[in-house]
Image (tube, rainbow, N blue to C red):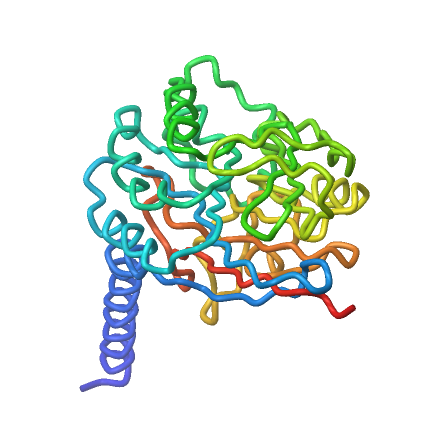
Amino acid sequence: MSPRATLTSVAATTLAATAVSSAAVAGWAVFGERRRFRVRHETLPVLAPGSPDLRVLQISDLHTVPGQEAKKKFVHGLAQLEPDLVLDTGDNLSHMGALPYLLEILQPLFAFPGLYVPGSNCYFAPMLKNPARYLWQRTSAGDDRTEAQILPWQAMHQAFDDAGWVGVINRADRLRLGEHVIEVSGVDDPHLGYDQHPGFLPATHPGSGLGQFEPAAGASASLRLGLTHAPYLRTLDRFAQDGADLVVAGHTHGGQVCLPGGRALVSNCDIEPERCKGVTSQGGLPVQISAGLGESRFAPVRLFCPPEAVLMTLTARAG
């Protein structure tokens, strides 16, 4: 065989191997990684000194489409963790007909007290777009949604309320949960520009006692909790200014398509990609960001970034 023929053969073999490898990675991203659900455990010393532990389960970014049985089975299994509190940080839907199926998915978790805030995919159905725009667009506040389908968000929120969960959508509340008094401040989706910070209620305010919570008149707070769907820096800074002890967010999908080792390339907002999942800090304020449990039905891919729920064990700060 001539040297030229040998080089041609080597090049062809290399290209074929590269093609096979790329196809294997793509297949894993579509059919494997996005069904590799996990529970991430975190221990955070954010409660007032002397407080007993509080077990908090965060679910986020389900992007529900009817028929996602693996996701349904995983979420049902989360009830076995028996959390003291469930936090839903938005983007629950990804299909106009998904609400009944979403409620089936969440039904076992409705047995526990819960708080929720919405994301853009609670309000608007996803549309087919150039996926590359995700690499540079940090906000969707200026997007034209005149042709977007409106998801049944009112019915979803009513179902959450009926189940005993409490929406903190541009509002604050003060709630008793067992031995704990939780001051919570939540905002509507910053990615849409809907956020209006309410601050925290004064200590003298008894709170609403809505859902599975009790009024908390006259008791000292165990925790000041900030809730948001998207962890924009302005949002985190405002929670820090208001005196939050912890902020919990979702939205980023942990980067969704990451480099080996889980390094995110983008965050889909203005927080740095290297801080878009896990526990980070904003000016000393602990921020927990979930990589979420789903992805848009028009981009059903995850790579080196498995879907997750997060179980936080909140412990007392040193006195």
